[in-house]
Image 1 (cartoon, rainbow, N blue to C red):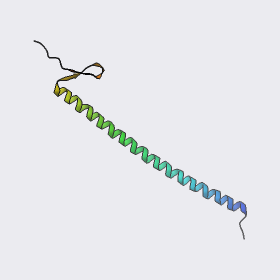
Image 2: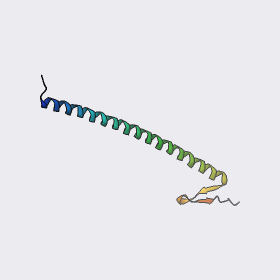
Image 3: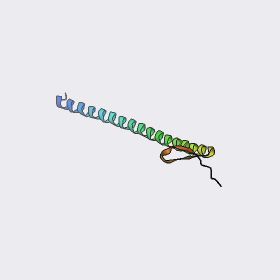
Image 4: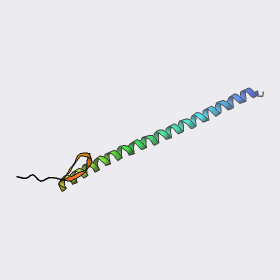
Amino acid sequence: MEKSGGDTDSKSAQDLTAVVQTLLQQMQDKFQTMSDQIIGRIDEMSTRIDDLEKNIADLMTQAGVEEGEGGESKPKEEESS
């Protein structure tokens, strides 16, 4: 008994749909993995920038420099007695 052409076309369409769904799921998984990696790197970079800012502030304090308005540095004024 031979299958009719309609059954073959229906099976092919189902197979194609399954392949496309699998590919889309794989792409979504890869994008999610990449997104997680990017967010992790941004968080790490943020932590490193915070540490760098703290270190710079510590160095400025040790050097006797105050941060002025607008982020500009100026020598710490000596108090006169």
